[in-house]
Image (cartoon, rainbow, N blue to C red; front, side, top):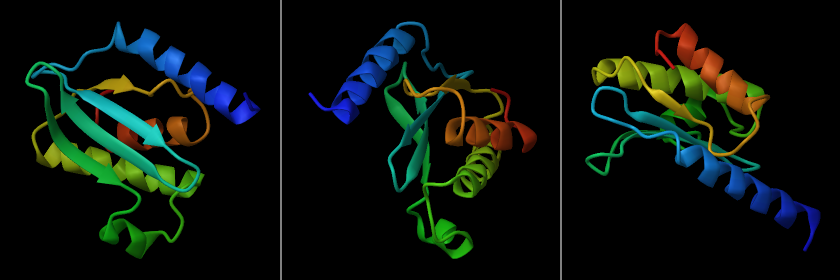
Length: 122
């Protein structure tokens, strides 16, 4: 097993452990983050109903107009702002943050901080 496969396996174990504690409800849906080397994805999910309420990624055409790259800190900040704006316009003010097993630093932290600054309560 290579080191990247080993790291991904560790992340999946952390994510499973985290998901035992974190669940989205109608009042406080779950903000799910997924990142790859080139892009980032964010979804707001109601786990009780089993529905995705909104989804935003760095691959969206509107996002590409502002930033050419989707896998850096600047893109994470822009994505956090877009998630917060979309959530607030949909009437969602409070969310549970699901970092997807990723360590809370770098792009994940930048996204969360930008969403908080735009008014989303994590």
